[in-house]
Length: 220
Image 1 (cartoon, one colour):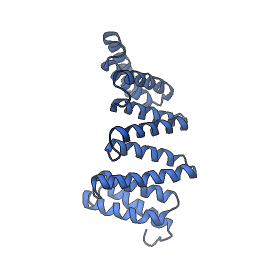
Image 2: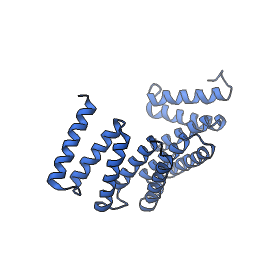
Image 3: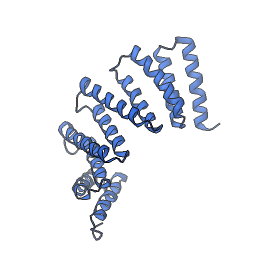
C-alpha cells in the first residue's frame, strides 16, 4: 500500500470504530470522519470527499453550531472541493457565506476573516473572467488595507497581502501598478529574511517579471 492508501485505510477504521463506540454525533467520530474526508480530497477522490464533508458539516451544525470555527473550516474545505469539481457557483457561494459570518462574528480585520477574503479573491481571480478578476483585485486591495490597519506595514500578514495583490496586478496587465508593490515587498523581505531566503528570491523574480512586462528589460 502507498502512504495515502495506508492513511485512508486507518482513517476508515478509526471512523468506523468511533462511530460504533460513541455514535455519529460524538466529537471524536466527527473528527475521524473529517480526517478521512481530507485524506480522500488529498487523493483526488473529490466526489467521495465532498459527500463526507457535507455529512460532517450537517453534524457540526447540530453539535457545534453554524458560527463555530470548526463548522466554518469544514465549509471552507467544501468550497475548495466544489472548485476542484468545477462547481464554481457553489464554491463561490460557500466562500462568500463563510466570509459574511466571520465578518459578523469575529471582525473584519481578524486573521481568519482575512484568510477567507484572500481565498475568495484568489478563487475569483483564477476564473480568468474580466468581471471576476476586477472583483478579485478589489478584494485583494481591501485585504491589504485591512492588514495594514490591523498589523502595520511590516507584519508578515501584510507582506503576504501586498505580494498577492502585486502578482494579481501584474498578471492582469497592470505591471505599472504592480512594480512599486513588488519593490516594497522585496525591501521588506530583505530586511526580515535576508538576501538569499526563498521568499526574497521569489520577490526578485516577481519584480523582474513586472519590469519585463513594462519593457524595461535592462532593469529586469
